Amino acid sequence: MASHRDLPVGLVNRLFLNTGSSSFTEFVGSYAPELLPQRNEVLATPIGDQVPHATTIVAATFAGGVIMAGDRRATSGNIISQRDVEKVFRADDYSCMGIAGTASTGLEFARLYRVELEHYEKLEGRTMSVAGKANRLANMIRGNLAMAMQGLVVVPLFAAYDPDKDEGRIFSYDVAGGPYERERFDAIGSGSIFARGSLKKLYRDGASADDMAMTAIQALYDAADDDSATGGPDVTRKIWPIVGVTDADGFRRLSDEQVATYVEQMLEARLISPDGPIAPLR
Image 1 (spheres, rainbow, N blue to C red):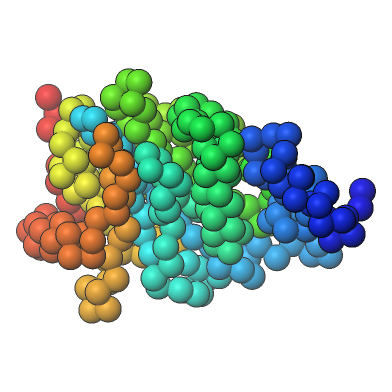
Image 2 (tube, rainbow, N blue to C red):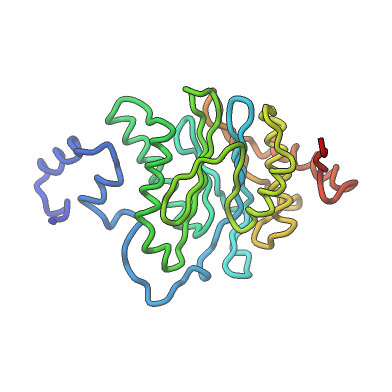
């Protein structure tokens, strides 16, 4: 197929006005596939351990919405490659996504997914359903499967407010797509097993956004306590976890000052109880 650069200007304009699909990635894949992050080159050797990887992301629902939080560390093998990487992103007004895995590819996915949702909204004149958003992200992940097999794995966590149910919803994925809807909470990344255990202990149905933000920060701290690839809050450099809240008012990222307040409260309590809050047996 001829490149869009070889086509007459008038025809190119008609293509952009009549894409034939509400999917931005399908449109770009038809006329300029080289612009997409998901390519099918076979690398001479897997390079997954040589590029920065991002971990850990947690998400948990609260009464009327969902919290997503991520630590700030990126690693290349046993080296800390970046201390302040961002892993939680706004997808649209009522959803967000976090990334674990190859950091650079994950950042591309986050930007492309945001454009994908905006493109649909402009063409269709309405917002995509929560299930539709989750499925669109799954299609993008499947397109990256060849690169994932070479070690450039990206696994997102998706969270959204569902106005039809007035509640938050969480979807997780594997390298082949998905999605898999999770009840109450979930975590991804190398520290996810420890974060999920912490969430299982501390989660309470019907909790407020404030309480669930603290729970998410506690879970990230527990993950950092046992997983060397997960970074805890850096008080000396003032690098705090990223915390996003999505509810009927839309997505909003908590300020560093707000997160610092949660972290200070948590650290003060851990001076007395280093392993964190203890869940009641009843």
